[in-house]
Length: 66
Image (cartoon, rainbow, N blue to C red; front, top):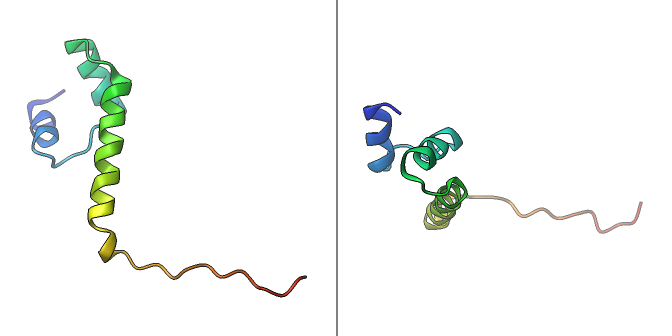
């Protein structure tokens, strides 16, 4: 992993990729699956914080039978 890639990850300018997680696992004996779950939880938290900015029209199925 390059120094800029690690810096971007640590400064939250990039998400953790599977390959990066595997490299960290091999270098520091930290479980890759744990790292990926942490990344997924962070992605979820960021999306929820920005939920007010996301506009979606609710899906309304046709009420008449075919």
